[in-house]
Length: 117
Image (tube, rainbow, N blue to C red; front, side):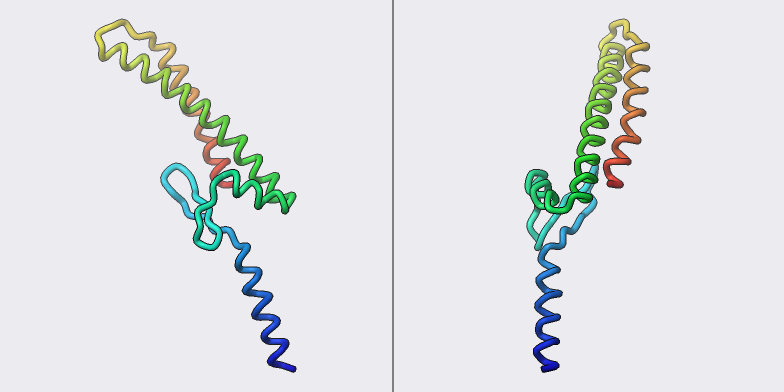
């Protein structure tokens, strides 16, 4: 009887381990794996829909990532445009470059928040 109970516990624990999603930090974010298989964002979303709280955190993270990306790329473009104009010998609009730097700076907390979630 003790062997049967032990076997059932081992089977239960092993079954629970199969649902584990591991996170590996990469440059600029994270990658998600389940059973050693890389999960795409849509696959992760489908898996997390079964857990309401995890799904809310996932959605919040995606929203923060989107806002941070838009602000970061827009700010980078504005700074690059001003610097490119200066390097090319034109008269750069430093106000646009400054606004771009501000947008890029504002994007950082969004990225940090998304990575924490």
